[in-house]
Length: 437
Image 1 (cartoon, rainbow, N blue to C red):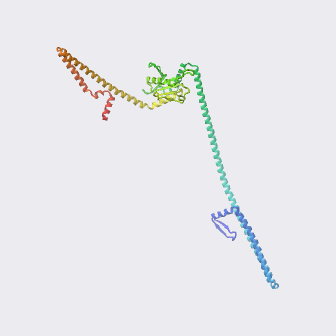
Image 2: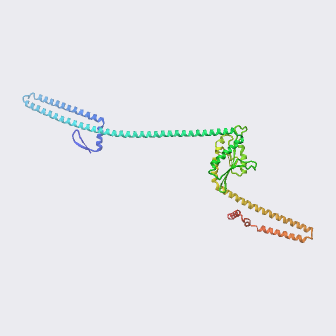
């Protein structure tokens, strides 16, 4: 609680924090100071007017009394003197009271000025605190802006550096490719047609031995020297999982000199390559070609021509190693399926062998029956021709009949169990058929 003294009555009373804050907030502004100044001046004017009014009233009363007492002038001299003394006392008391009130007002004004000064000091301190907070916030924001600017500049410099590195890398690759092209052009210019083709083969062979051979030491990669079928490829690649061959590739390398009058196309060699692949029992066929150097199709990467010939690809020399690794990894994933396919094919061969044996037995049985029938006919003819040899012929007939009986017994004794003996595949098939039915 705060105490405030009333400037009019001098009474001291207490107010709460909210009321005191309201008074303080009123004192803080300039209008309140102007109001205080105006009220002080008005109070002073009122005091002056009061004094003048009192003086005028006193003079007027004195004049009235003087007029009334003119007739009693001698009689009222003593009264006049007394009244003059009374007027002097009243004027003195009024002067004392005015001085007291003026001093109180001065003290109140000084107190209000002190409160105003204190409020101004508190206001200035609050303003300074707010200014410090605002300055700190501004400094913090400036630091954040500077930090973001630094990050932005760093990222910008980093992106510029990466762009320069990428550009330099591409320029280096372009120079290397151009040097390789110039090298091959120069090499072709100094070689014969046969040497150009052999150089590409040697290049691919070197790539395989330096790149694939260390990771696949037991893989087969040799030149195809078997021309017994009328033609041969350039290289054959094979690899095994244990004793199971899971991949095989027939390679053909084609190149020609730039000055060659008749330019060949890649398509001219696809049919022969497919025939070589089939003849050498290879799964894939790959044409490594430098022909048609301006073709966008063959320059983009690995070209799949399986729509023309099964499992055939056309590549540039730089895709020789990637294609081998791609086909190897793909084939390794299907080794289990390939083994199941081979097993199914072997089972199919067992069924075929069973059918062949059955047909062979039927043919031999029919042949025996035909031979027996012919002998029977010849025996009847012999009977007709020679009665003398009837006994011999009859014996022959009995023998033939016995053979027929034995053959018939064999046919009747023929069962699935005997036919499937030592043939587990057919036995499993018939058992499966019995279970299904």
